[in-house]
Length: 292
Image 1 (cartoon, rainbow, N blue to C red):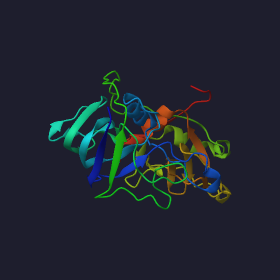
Image 2: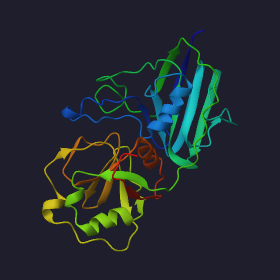
Image 3: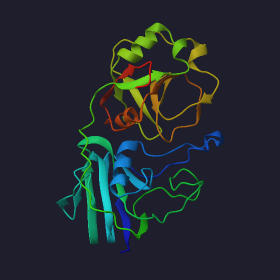
Image 4: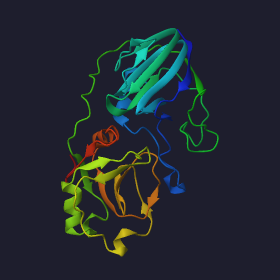
C-alpha cells in the first residue's frame, strides 16, 4: 500500500519550523547545527511511525496554528499540549493517526510546554541545502501562510499506542556541568547562577533562552577582561554570561561567542526541559560534577 499526504499552512501559529538532523558537521564554517529544540518529543513522534528519530517533522512554537491535510497518510503529534483538534474533534497525541481525505488540524495556545511536533509518515518533498531541509541557508523558504509540502509514502506504519504521554514540564533544576570559564568567575557570581531562579524572557527563541534574574540583588559587574573575551566555539546547551544576563544557547545559535561560557547542560533531557519551559516561567540550575 502507498499514498501521498499533502500539508498546507493556513496559519503557522506562534512559529513553525521544519526540523531534521540539522547540519552538525558544518560548525567550522559558521553554520548553526540546527535540529529540534526538544529532541525527545521529536524522537517520540518519529519513533511511533517507525522512522529515524531525527527524520523530518514540524516544530510548532507557542500556538499550534492551522494546517490543512489532503490525501491519505499517517501523522503523530507530540510535545506541548496545544489542544489539537482534527475537523473540530479532539486529536489524539502520542499515537498514530490515519488520515484519508481532507482534514483541518488546529491548535490553540500551549496549555503545557512550549513546542509541539508533527511527524508525518513518508518522504517530505522539500528543498535541501548542505544535507538538511531546515531554513537558514539560501533556497529554503521559511514557513508562512501558503507554504505546502507533499509527502509520498510507500510503507504504512503499524498502529501503536505504547508510548506514555510525558507529564507536563516540571520546575526541577536543570543539571549543568561547569563551562570553560566557570572557574574564572568570582564566587558571588557562581552562587548567583546556582541559587537564583531565572525567568524566561519573552524574546527567547530557537537561538537562545534569555534569562532574567528574579533576585533583587545582583553581584558586582564582572571585570572588563571577563565581560568580553576572544571569540571561542560554543554549542547548543551552553550558558553564556552576557552583560544583560545569562543566555542558554539553542539549536540555531551562533557557532562562536565572546562571552564567558559558564555552564553547559548535562543531558538531552535537560535540553528538552529547558526549551519546553514557557515564556515568563522559571528556570534554575543545579551543578553536577560527574556524568549522570
